[in-house]
Length: 464
Image (tube, rainbow, N blue to C red; front, side, top):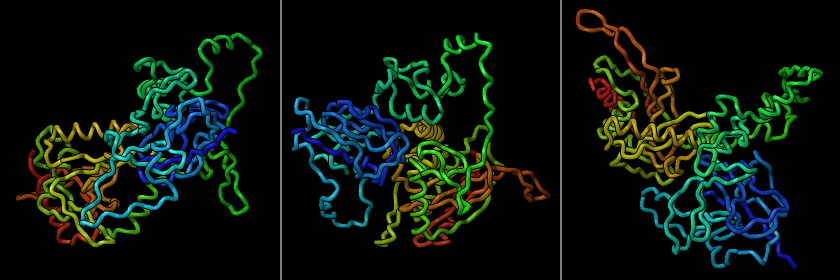
């Protein structure tokens, strides 16, 4: 008698309660081998390729592209094939749903170190940690470890097209048909740049006829004129609320849709911060009149934050509101808020206190590029000691940016402007940049926040 097995969605290493299906690499009735790519899933931080935990025939797939699957819920059902390789029972070790949690380590008053355990596909679901015999693989975005090898974001051939999961997700978002994109990657793989280029020039739109077919279709003269498509308002329910008339995977304006990926996590993080932090904001303007040509605004802001943190360590800290413990940091890791269409990312510029202006600029550029390509490591999106939101590059003077625990403070930089400034003998037009410092008043005093802001303003007033 054949044996069937359910595969539950594992914790993809980020502690999130769910993930969104991007693309299945198989269909029901297919036979898959152990560790072959099964599905790509989008979390708040990455598009992750999930390998098959068994070898056998696929009986059922739970959900379609765009569906949200809770962590621990059944993702797929298999009929095991005894003639194909299977993972040994001894390899499925660690915790899973329903197992007792390990004993907590004694509290030291310090934040727990970031976990570097790799994630293994398990039929039980949950995060399965290595038993110590494997090499430490660290955190690999778009990768999961099974057996003794790391399955990185490989260019999997689906429908004759080779592309990594993140590229497929971007193509779906931009409405690009991967089968019509000119591939420039290794061994004919479609790259992120290929997809963006195709989206920009409109050469591979989903649903568009291929060039040869379009030429053939241009000959008939009796072809009916295309129907005019007009935008329609969403139908309303009896309660006067928008009523969904499309499946959840279809984006429809005026209709409710589930938040997914980055935006879903952003909603949770902001709600958690709102419930835990007692925020207070100070505002002032930094005078940039003395600046010499060639100053990088972002680099100067980061440097000013570093200087202020060194003068007022209370703002460069973490706070545990439950244990009422504070951790002051000797180093300065600045979280740089990056706004994207998918939502807000805050990657960490590590050891900003050791970087010069060039190092800061190169670091910020690298982080932005990795965020845009969705290739940034999950470990780079946490652990910063203070953060910066440079919203002024778009618009706005002052703000009340959100402090996300365990951090104590965040700096907001508004749009620079010129203003008339009194000087000896008259007035001058000086360029100023608005600053907003929001801090957790449970742990930092108003005096500390004011001295921190003063230190930033003094540093920004220097010529270079």
